[in-house]
Length: 309
Length: 179
Image (cartoon, rainbow over all chains, first blue to last red):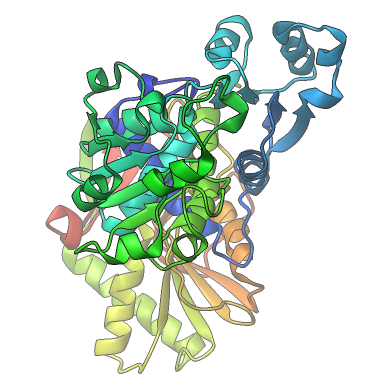
């Protein structure tokens, strides 16, 4: 059980349960490290990592960069908007050029689903998928489960509802895989137009009524409407969406138990979640961000230890 | 694969008492001294010593911490297996304190080297000493020597010193195993 079953982190789909446990146990140790006054360990001093982002990101990019630096890796940052991609270079060419500068690991975000899988087949480096289109965002799902485990003690047997734009969300899909793998019960909730047609084949329940979903769950993971991916109109107005699928304090207070509120960010305050909920003590949104660094350190450490010298 | 007993339970007990007395001689009331057991096996030696000092020599209070050195080791990616971490638990500052690092077996000295690096994350100690139960002579890769040693042994490279503890393995015993 002491090493990962994979050489790349392309999606939760390719992991098994003991991989997830190993990542969490390792992340526990890194969480202790990043709470010291000196937050850095020298493990990866001979590893170079390139962060290649073909899509905008603040949280994920910063979190990965911080994780890499806390492990003492050398870090290269690359944004597609300022690069030769604009001049017509292909993905493989871009990455191979970067790898010829002796890079060991690539963290990539890309708008196309499967970009990471494609890359892993064609280049010699360990690949971490930091989000590929509407497909997967594995480190986000890992840090979400890690945060649930920290707050509630365990993920197995917990009821988790994912609310919002399930259709376009890579966070939703990775979370469904991760939660199911750990034995949690999962439901999705949102406008019918934003629920994928065959989502039930993943062992997930569908609930159209937000109140019923919240009454059932221990944890509610609130997702943002992915306006940049909405090619057609999926619901009449944002206001109507908020009325049906937005969480506010009044709704939470009317439940007979205290549920945990999560959000992968960025938050659209007043749309899927009101400010008083986002900033309440039920919300673990900022814990998720802190845990993100520890979990990414664990993933990078475990993958790097499989890179042959 | 042969094995012989290096130290019996009784001998280990005598040695631990001697080491406790030596610590007492140099650190008196342990006000400015902290003991740090190196994970995973050094913590048993450290816990035993603290128990003896508190119970039998009536020291009032001793700060005891556990230090994991996995992320500071110099053999990351050099072996077959992923290095697995254990827990670090240091609930006090070591700034300006005298630190006694404690481990069960001193062999190449590389673990101690990693421990010295790891220690820097917790402040600048006044001085650092090393206590080991077993000192394998002539096998050092680095210029590191213990300040307190339980027993010095000569063991060749394909021999292994195995320390067993009652808490973990059922009885106190130290073996020399021929691989």
